[in-house]
Image (cartoon, rainbow, N blue to C red):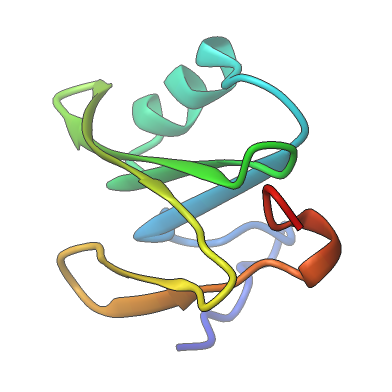
Length: 96
C-alpha cells in the first residue's frame, strides 16, 4: 500500500515492516530506533549467510520471533499482516 508523505517529506505513520539487508550481523542500535518510532516488524537479512532474523516489536524493543535461512527456492514468511516470499539471487545463495 502506498502511503503519501506529509508536508515535511515524512511518512505520517510508521510502516508495519522494515527490512534491513546488510552483509553481517544485526545492528541493534538501528533496530532499537525503529522500535521506538513504532515499526511493528523488523527483519534483518544477512546477505552473506542468507539468514533472516524476524523480530516483532514488544513495547519499545524487538523480540526475535524466528530465524529463517533462505534456500535457492526462497522462503515464505508470515509477518502477521501478510505473507512474503523472500528469494536471493543465485550468487548469494549459500553453497552455490
